Image (tube, rainbow, N blue to C red; front, side, top):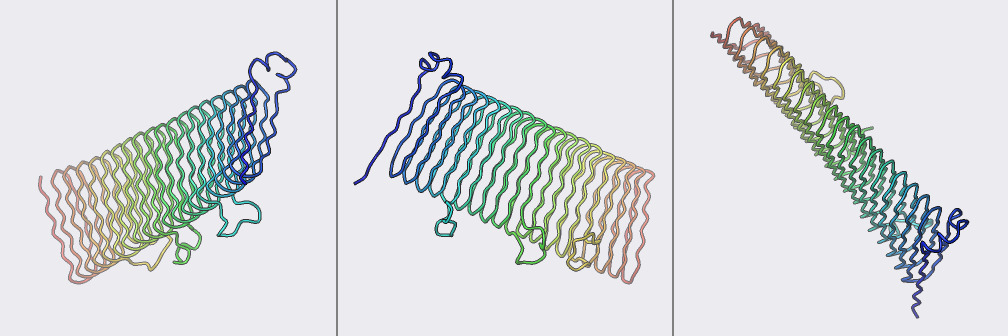
Length: 474
């Protein structure tokens, strides 16, 4: 015979106002339910109220509402298909939820300041075997106000976490362990902080940050993970780490098929993406001023796009592996773009628009980590529009190609190729530009064209069967 118990606990505003002593001390509900499909409802108004709920069984439910300040909801639910729904209005309130089992859910909403939501969804003690892992749990936490804090921990499989914060000086800490879990985190305000960590396989994450002087930190470990980060504001600091970096050059330690997309719109942004493994993709787009983007990928075959629009931007791309591709587009003044790529078949494309830029491409001059040293079949494509730029290209290997176009005045190009069968094609339009080209090896080719006044071309070829064609017009 199935037993269904219903406990409805309600305290009205009239009762609380009638007793000053009761108001100061607050009210307390202690709820204990064991069985199946039980429901507890608690409503509290004013301050210092406490709801403590313990439910064991399947299909249990807790619905609570508190309106006031320094109120607390503490809930423990064990087994399957349990749910908790709570709404808090006021300041200094706290919601603490501990759920053990499968298909459990939490829906918590707080409006006010200096409130805390803490959610822990896990397997019960003694049930931490794969067949009994916590799974299919969901948590939704929404906070509206300022100086609030959300903490969420999920262990097991196929868990989902959604957290939304609207206001200033907020913080979100999210932790997921298992696979394939997902999280969706949103912060809107000023001086907010967000940290997300995911361990396992097939995890996905989406982070949205809208505000100023914010910080985002994310970490994923495993394979087939995905992360999408969007920032809209100024002074953002975004760090994304995916993979097992230690021992990355051993296939057994790879974190495979990761991808990270970061969009940052504002001033003084700082983005750092590190991915270790294979089949990684990283796209970083920044719009604003004083942006800095650093992308490091270890593995093969990888793809990286960094697009910065603003002033004094700095983009550094480091890829090590096979058949990597990197594209950096910068549009501003005093931008710095550097690409370092490792082994065979890498492609680097870089577009600089502005002035006083420093552009560096290294394929492969070896600046740790390393696979084999010399590289082959690399391609470097550069388009530089501006004046007073310095461009440095180094290629070490065979059958490498440089295709460089420079439009502007007072620019300096230094390019070096070591190996056989390499080729350099250079077109410069402008005045008082200088091209320094050095090739060491055999069967190398230089095709150089300078259009303008006061240009200088210096080239050196060492080896046999090399050829050079230089055309200067004004």
